[in-house]
Each structure stands twice: as C-alpha cells, then as structure tokens.
Image (cartoon, rainbow, N blue to C red; front, side, top):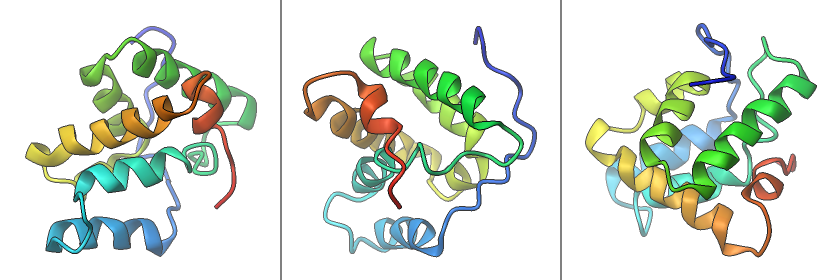
Length: 124
C-alpha cells in the first residue's frame, strides 16, 4: 500500500480491556461479537499508536485508514489493522475479521464528517 511503512512487530500496548473485549466476543457475551470490538476500537485508534511511529507520522497512517474506510476498501482496512495491530488481529479469528472491520466502518461513518476525526480521538 502506497505510503505505508512496514511495521515490524508493532508494540501496541493495548490495555487489558481491549483484550477483554476479544475474549467476550469469543465467548459470545458481547451482543454483536467482533463487530462490537471493531466499533469500540474505532474510537481508540488515535490513542493506540505503535511505539516505533512518531505522533505526526501516526496521523498520516490513520489518514490512510480513513481513506480506505471512505472508499469501502475492506481488504485494505484489514491489511492496515494487521500491519499496525498484529497481536490484536491474532486474537480475532480470520473468519470473524470481516465482522470486526464492519464495526470499524459502522462507527467511523455514523457521524457526519470524516472518519479520520473519529479515528484520531485520543481518549482512552
């Protein structure tokens, strides 16, 4: 993908509650499963910058994700998450990753405006 750097093992540093969401989705205790994980995580992307990427650069990478979302490029969205959040994506079964992506898309397109505004919120 143009403009992306190869993210070696991105040190995500997700708090336990994000991993907890995945456990809840796996066990069936989240109402919409992995779709809810994507929905909730979409509000946190700005806060979970991999340690090896600077803040200014991270905004550019998130802008690429926003473009993929705006164009409905589900495969590119999945690749983005696998590149920048590989350990998180390992917690989501391959066959459920489309549900996760649907949740990300749903949350970032609910509000009027650009998906990047939703993605870059930094509240945890």
